[in-house]
Picture 1 (cartoon, rainbow, N blue to C red):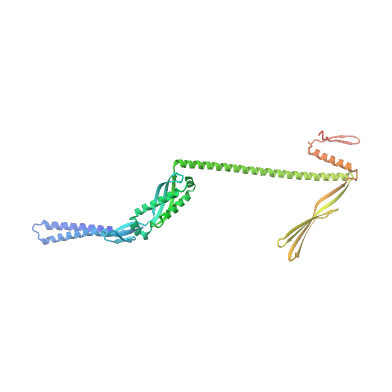
Picture 2 (cartoon, rainbow, N blue to C red):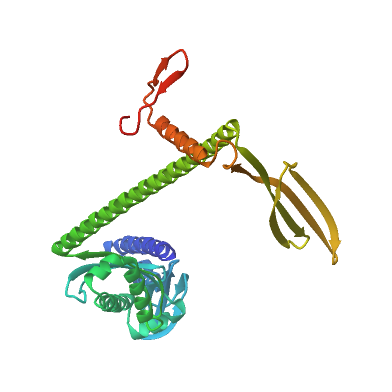
Length: 402
């Protein structure tokens, strides 16, 4: 801005001086026989114009403005002498020159070709961000000459490191682990640039990996085949799970049916036993009854000690079922004892020698069991009944003629 203002001011001054010189010269040389003294204003105006022209040539060019986000390297007759931070400076341009370096974050997109370990061609794109180290600007200017040369060297290192990483693995491995290889490229490039190039690397990202169309098609086909395989495995696992559940259901049903049959059989046996006892008594057989009682003793203490004991007793008479709880201090511990007496079973003993005799009792049992078997397959029809004057006849089909 200052350089522009000075240039405009001096340019206007030069124009005014030239205009005055022309006017004075016209006045001095237009009159014949004019005295030398009349030409002095012209000479003064001409000298002023020349002085303003000299200032116009030297002063604006000697003002140097360093913008924000840049730094300048100052050379004096070609030798680097200092640096300038953002601001405005006056250095005679014929002695000192300014080389401006951009200190903002540089963004560079690098594209290159590479080969995988198994010879597959790929096109790579790397996004690189870096920033020059302001404190080392003079070293950059000395070793590289300018920022463009430094940038070219950084791009070369990035390309070499990227190719080295990508050529260390097979193409399919790269496809399956893109993020890993992006991290590997970033690490390798950062280590390659390090501090040797006087920049701070902000970010390195492998943004794109393109293989040939043939390889991409092969990868796609493999992925589809793998997906179909996985889908088949999933279906098979689902079918297997369904089959397992169905088998478990059938096992559960079978167990339930078995338990039901067991309960029914037990109930039928108890009913048959009770009926035989009842018939035996009605026919005059002696029936003796004994009651079996189960006594259970549970012992618990404060320290969670637990024990249980049981015993059986037989009584000719029916007793009352009881439960009792006692607590006592034993060896410094509160011990709780729970005693339960409950009817466990009832035993019936039939004296077959009494009443009609053993043969008659055997026939009675066989006839009753045959009757129960008949009831299991009875179709609902009543047996034929014939009434007479002295007796009633009940006709039950025999085993050979059901």
